[in-house]
Amino acid sequence: MSLYFSGKDAYNSGNYAAAQQYFQEALVKDENIEAKAQNIKYMLGVSAFNNKDYKTAKTYLVLFPDNPIANDLLQKIEEFEKTLPEDFLYHNENDDEKVITPSPTHSVMLSTETAKKNNNTKQSTTIIIIITTIVIMSVSVFLEIKKSMFSKIALKLVGVTSDTILIKNNQDANNLDTNKTKLTEEVEETQGPELNTMSLLETPFDEEIDIEKMASKDIKEISRFFDEVNEEVVFVDNLETESSEEIVENNEENKKDDDFESARDSILNSILDDEEPSELEDQENQPENKTKAVNEVSKKPKYEHLDNIPDDFNVNSAIDKAFKLIEETNRLQTQESEQKETEDFKSIGEMEKELEEQEKLNLDYFQEMEEIDDASLKNFLDYVFEQHLEVGHK
Amino acid sequence: MNRITSVVIVPLFEKNGEINLLFTKRNQKLKHHAGEISFPGGKVENGEKFFEAAKRETLEEINCSVIKTIGTLKPVMTLVSDHLILPYIAFIDTRNLIPNDVEVESIHTITIKKLLKTKMQKRRFPYKRLFITTPVWEFDDFYVWGATGRILLDFKKWLKKQGRKLHAPDLSKKTSS
Image 1 (spheres, one colour):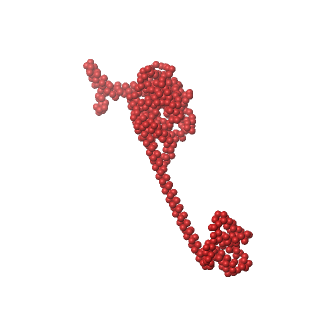
Image 2 (cartoon, rainbow over the protein chains, first blue to last red):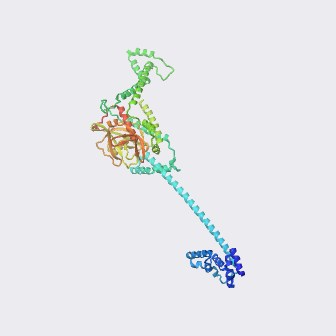
Image 3 (cartoon, rainbow over the protein chains, first blue to last red):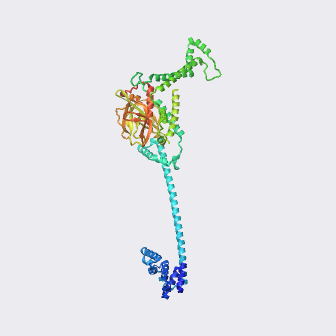
């Protein structure tokens, strides 16, 4: 009976190996032990189960079909039987050591050794797990860095190609074959939508647009255009002044406009240029008019403190001509204002203003097409053009 | 961002005693302004003179030689394709007119009389998945807008300023200038 109690103590303390040994010895030595302790076989089955001696566990736990714990353990044993090989499942470690009959103390020592072994295996597995996680993490980080570097290099390469395309289009176009230019144009086309997304990254595309540079380039082109126009454009010399169906309605007014410009130019020339002095010189050269010319010169006021005004400057005639000029300008201004009222079409600027007022333009579309930069540039160039034309007229 | 300099010809020719204006409808497969109405012209190559480029492009696109240039118009910007367009007004020889299928889908013409009678009006029409409201020249079978529309408006002003009847040069004395 002492064996039973020792086994029970071991069982309660969780030392199932010792418990199994005690219970098995008690059953062998005392035939009536089962009558005294009804649950000895149950505890032996549970201890055997915990010691992974499933064969023994099964033989004893079967005896308690009404015990839910026993049934549960039996069910687990059945599952093990399905998954694990029979040799492994029913290999009793004690079978190899059957020669040695283990004493309780010996079994306790064995259990401590197994516990130590378990601890060692646990430590080794945790170390292995940590090492593997570190390795995996380092590999993933390395791959990420490599990937980002590759993408940056790829973007840089793309940036370089786009720049070269633009250079090719503008500078080296003559040196390229037609096939090559077509190819570059295609590339440029395909890169169109990508450029916007790439500009968000650190690429050559996030450079700011230099509007002044663009405008200066345009102005150079435009001035070159006009320089070449002077050489190349030949206005039709057989334009007739006959009226016909195609003659424009404002013919007379336009003529007046032309007359005004010519009159203005001649007046300004007469005031500022050396036209009159030359005439005077001619007159002076003639002996008959010499005295008359001298008298006229003597009448002219002298502005000795102003170096830029010639001595023979005729102020009276200049004033007369200036008044004529003012009158002519006022007359033409009124004509222009009347003409504007009766004009049957509107300029694009006026129409755009109307559109903005009446119904809002689809600005999204224009924003997508860089309307803001172009519009400001267009206005600037329009202004430059007007200046250029004015200079040209003068 | 580099603006591309282009030149166009506002091409005039005589037909049945009337001066006509020619337009080209660009091919749908082209990179820029596909399917739009435009004037013959294109990009100025590096080192090339503007007028030479205009003559070359006109010959390439519609196989017409430029007979005489009679004027120029104010340069125009395109809002979409970043082009600076320099327009020439010129008479062309249409006797050998053959549109280049690669670049030109079809040819459209109007008389000067028709142009003078037509007004530019605002229209709302679909363009590439969007609706845009913009001034448009609406002719019988086509409409003109954008940079070409602005060039046409300038050309109409130019015509009014001339105040004279245009006469096509004699084709028998064809001299390209």
